[in-house]
Amino acid sequence: MLRSAGTETRSTFCLLNESSQPVDVLLAVDRGGIGTLGAQIEHQLRVAIRDGKLRPGTQVPSTRDLARQLGISRRVAVDAYAQLAAEGYLLLRQGARPRVSASASAAVGAPERSAASSRDAVIRFDFRPSMPDVSSFPRRAWLRSLRAALATMTDADLGYGDPLGVESLRASLADYLGRVRGVVAGAESIAVTCGYSQGLGIVCSALAERGARRVAVEDPSFAEQRVVVRRAGLEPVPVEVDELGLRVDLLAAADVDAVVLTPAHQHPTGVVLAADRRAELVSWLRERDAVAIEDDYDAEYRYDRAAVGALQGLDPERVVYIGSVSKSLAPALRIGWVVVPPALVGAVRAGKQLADRQTDRIQQHAFGDFLARGELDRHLRRQRAEYRRRRDALLAAVARELPGAKVSGIAAGLHAIVQLSESDDEEAIVEEARRRGIALDTMNAGRAGPPRSPATLLLGYGQISEPAIGPGIRAIAEVIRSTREPPP
Image 1 (cartoon, helix red, strand yellow):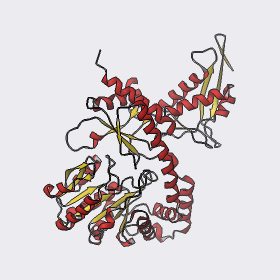
Image 2 (image 1 turned 180 degrees about the vertical axis):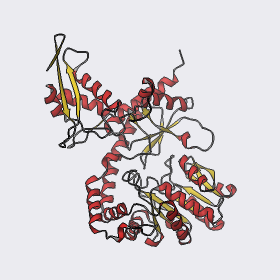
Image 3 (image 1 turned 90 degrees about the horizontal axis):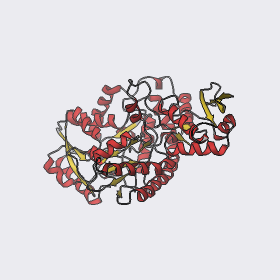
Image 4 (image 1 turned 90 degrees about the vertical axis):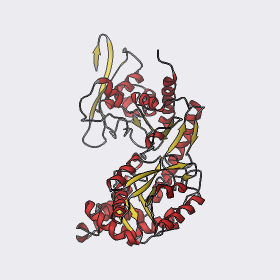
């Protein structure tokens, strides 16, 4: 018990880890100090998280433990944690010990910066559309599959193998993709990669060796795709996307040998390639003797519409299909796949051999077991329900806080497109949001050409908790209002 200037201060070292190796942090409440007891707890935890003393994923005491250790009402602890969760600092899950949110802490070990720039780096609300909820990764199910893999792998399995990947996994992938995506493939036409980008790079290099020169890329799209295409020695050619998907009628004039597209859920617009355009695209591929590279982005997450089959099923001889587990499980699990026409199998095998010889074979065996036991199906069913709740919360918050905004792209995926007024300054909004600790993306960030109006935000709900969505949208609304005000 500490006493200062006649007031009573209660302090404690709280055990933040349930293991036998405790991590100590000092929390103190001063009944005669400034602010309520709850506000003092909130302030100290915010500072500890911002400074990197409490790292992402670190466990914190339960509200019951915190109340007992500090000698306060449990209601004070509950309210303090709820506020920190709403701001994105803590992750609260029923039946689990509270943790520091994965997106709450500033980078540790970065070069020293001024206090102002350090504050700017703290992310309070993360609406970036590129990440799933990695806290939901099925750790126990994956550990079981990993143990099964190590228990059944032979000594030969631990050596070098076919660069295309473990045959049993490729067979399981062929069955799975045929069942859920309508992909027509056998194990012999599938290559296991270290994610989407590697698969795209290997395929583009194979096309360049065959004489391809120019590749059409959706506009807007992932900027990274254009970089990958260019590094393979090909010229990326932007082709417009409208409300029906890629403008297939522009491909002939673009004079391209291949096209990269996201037909099931275009990123970032969220539109689906219309049926007549799919047919038109297949006709163009055959006439031009060209290749389509299908990025099956976000195909697993759909809420208000039926599943859309893969384009590859319409012409397996001319469509390359690429997928990964980055959005369905976690980016840290570097497993992807490429389904290639027979004519490209040899070149893709050689490209993978030169890239890294093979994707981690232990992880491949584990993922094969994970897939065969139906764990991926179960995980996706759980996540669809969770993401739908978050999407609905985001729509309600936008309707409440930004009544003039136009929302689209909400039937599937992990983000919503929010179109603002013609007079809003997109660049100013992004900069002010960053200054206030709000991470978001915009439509113009994916455009190959000059920015267009109106300002359009991409608000992801994959990695922000449901309780934080409402306060986050309210903070974005305040940012937008502040950029509309004339300078003093």
